[in-house]
Length: 406
Ligand SMILES: Cc1ncc(COP(=O)(O)O)c(C=O)c1O
Image (cartoon, rainbow, N blue to C red; front, side, top):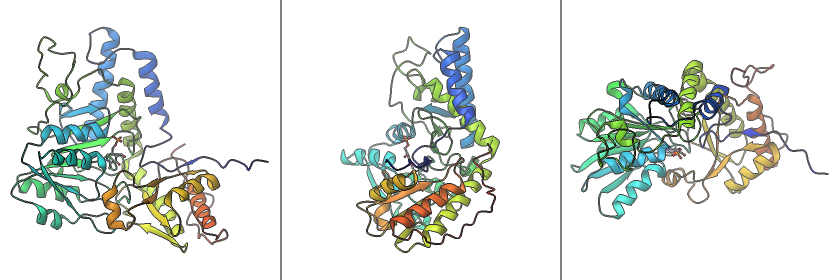
């Protein structure tokens, strides 16, 4: 007899959120089923509906990044593209750029690509053993030729949060630009706005913002003008073989992914309706309980300090086990879907002591429950041979942490 299949427990939110809230799915379906036109291309009724959907997404994205003017917000197909546009479109030959050890390959690889071709020099500011970067270290690494500071708002490995406002101010005071990768914070951490905002902010729509893949945000302050990396049709000024100068048109060549943008708009509205603070509190309650349960198991090493202000991510390793095996066993034993490895962020692992095989990563989203935490802790206990270990369950009974606002 085959053993019963455990229920699916999705805890891979830092990679992408799931399930998507109902209104997000409805918005995607509405765009696909009812709108049927390319945004920015035409004046017939469906084209106008498509334009309205895209304008709604832009306005919602502007609210999330705290931009007064939605026309400073380009909607791109992913954070990776947005970060590439920001880096390749802004840096000039001869610049020195600073990045941090807690960053993702979505920024480190474009910087390395430029450095390999002798176009820039870049240095990586180290982080501490929890993934935090000390602004004094950034100040210490700043050179006369430094023109840009690139940093991830929160580590996608440990959830540790950087002091984005201080880092952006530090760059500005030294006459450089700041590029904030908010992919692991938009939707779960309020982004610094106004004067405290970075010069350029890029955010994935499909992670903590709960949107579909295919929609991401690229904001740049007025006067910070990335060049167009991709040239093509914009639906405007078509008799000019050069790209339009206007910010959003310059950066949005090609037919937009309307379904993704409709989903992004609905997702942001949903996040706003629930409240970032409430979503974060829910995730952190689960993450803190999970950390406490895992910490009690001999052989488990937790990564990072469990930053209660960052995204609710729990990173850990299990003594004598390859993280990939732990993730596979978690799924086999308890249906827990986790990610193992380096998480596209190899440098931080050098500071965590997890280079090589990396770590196991869990993230707690709106629809996760106390049961998911219990399942994780029990599964890790059984991997370690302590199936009866006593997890002092911090949740009230009957549970008061329901699937998010069912
Ligand atoms: C910190 C960080 N930056 C950038 C990205 C890239 O996002 P995407 O793969 O959606 O382009 C990710 C996704 O894993 C991330 O965690």
